[in-house]
Length: 458
Ligand code: C2O
Ligand code: CU
Image (cartoon, rainbow, N blue to C red; front, side, top):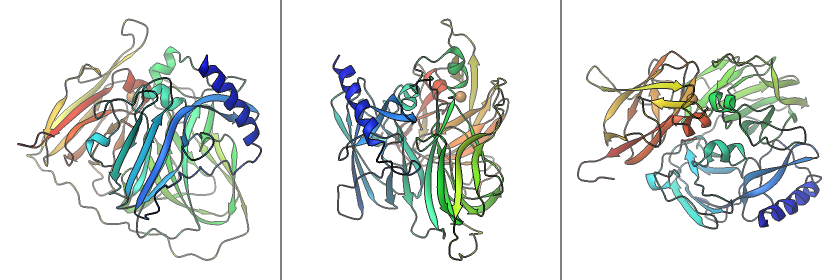
């Protein structure tokens, strides 16, 4: 009863604040409560509220609110730090169920990882304080790690960017969190996933960039740095920008040593890309069909947002041809290989599919053990009929075949193929690895890794 009343009030509020419209593609920045320039201190409230994905049609969502501001936003407050900053985020749970906040990609002490293996879930009404040093520059994001398929779909996610000391020249820098939502005609979220949603990972019918559908980026011609994260449950974004190309300078784990030009950017759920674009004419950022298995139909190109240019920008230097150097993880014939075989069962008995790693499904998996400081190769064999983005918590890895291309924490493993990557165990504790199609993870495609040091168990 109380919950229903609250929602009605928030819907009314959301209706009137929309008219003071801010640029829909600019995220609300998190309020930094600590004046010390090397400390970023943020207070978030996870709660129920409303946003208008479709104009004039408020939808009940779950989201993060900056505790010192009025309303929640989807995505949640945008958090920015410099390399080396101490980041403190207090999360108050005002949701009707438990939650956690996972800092996807950030290397941090295991008790701060925000999974139910690393902490006691935050009970409704309670607060948990996350605290870590942002040691790596890069594009990261935060989201719950409990009932993630539901909580993230409902709107609980946000971006965290850790800026490098020496960024490439650009006329503007922007962060875009990509998502899709499945909406009814009245603009509300469809909250009953069907069997196909569980099988493929939920795909929505409305594409969002920073929570906005069909928005327009009004800017000047010139060079911009765009960062992307794919926060969708199941949709793969395959971006193009007609008349333009992307100059890829970074991905999951920060800048890459050898930037490259790309006509399209395939971003699987959980992955990030960091690109430069030289905007020269009006265009549209679109997502093209990508065949990820199970014959998902091709809807043709879908608009992410339009780009409208006016004026021009001052001249700017050449695009960087090299990024910061990166030390390859050295492996040889004696490096141990661990095999992870991904399989699926179409009906586990109740009509829902089951997704497995090495024949086991989370939470009934046997944790695997590794020694702190060791290097191993992970060989992920996808024996299923669809692609799975494989994510490891706690440490980055280097994908075989492209060892100098940079650090990843989420890698696409196309169906019926094998991907190998090298991992150095640089963090103690229990870490999750899983498919980042959220329905797949929740339906079993998740496991746990325990990294121990002799004489110093955790
Ligand atoms: Cu982005 Cu284990 O998650
Ligand atoms: Cu999957």
